[in-house]
Length: 242
Image 1 (cartoon, rainbow, N blue to C red):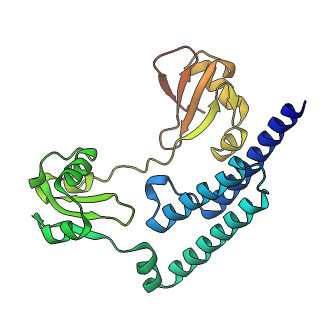
Image 2 (cartoon, rainbow, N blue to C red; image 1 turned 135 degrees about the horizontal axis):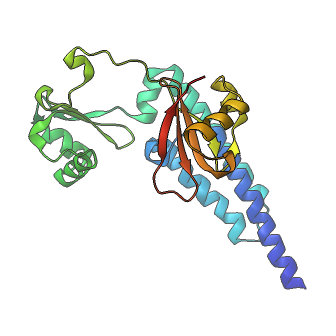
Image 3 (cartoon, rainbow, N blue to C red; image 1 turned 180 degrees about the vertical axis):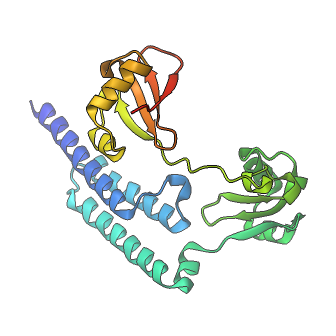
């Protein structure tokens, strides 16, 4: 009986710490791990280490983990606000981007200063489907470690504006059905109603809402893109006729 109580206590403590860290990390902001600055990364590691203490040591009160975590989050928010308002503080906290390639030339001294080698450079270029170093005009190492690249003008993909073409506005597709469930807010956003959705599905896709895995409305064309349950390919989109 005592063992069950002990396990129950551990599960409860784990749940409390999990929810606490989850809420506080959400308060810190919506940034992916790959987009964290060095300061954010250090704070995340310290939060993880601090949260583990009351979980591994049952004798340690939860407050000994929650209070330091809240303090770290508060410090991070204060410094983030400071960096937002003052450029000098932003440079000190987040650092500044570094140019690795300038006008097609490798800046060897800068790479040595950053302890950034050719394997790192070529690996990050390959991640962007760039395999020939000679095609790069500029490459900049961002503060989060990602590499931003500008290709030479004769190696960049052709854009409509290069050909003097002005494509029509496409808009953003609006999901209307997820796994047979109508997204009523999105349906109102698309200025459509349930009757229109049912009619369009029956007329253009020969199915009911319950058979739809995913459906999205294209405001530019009036088309409804539909993926039916159990099908490998989407059904041809029908153009809005009403």
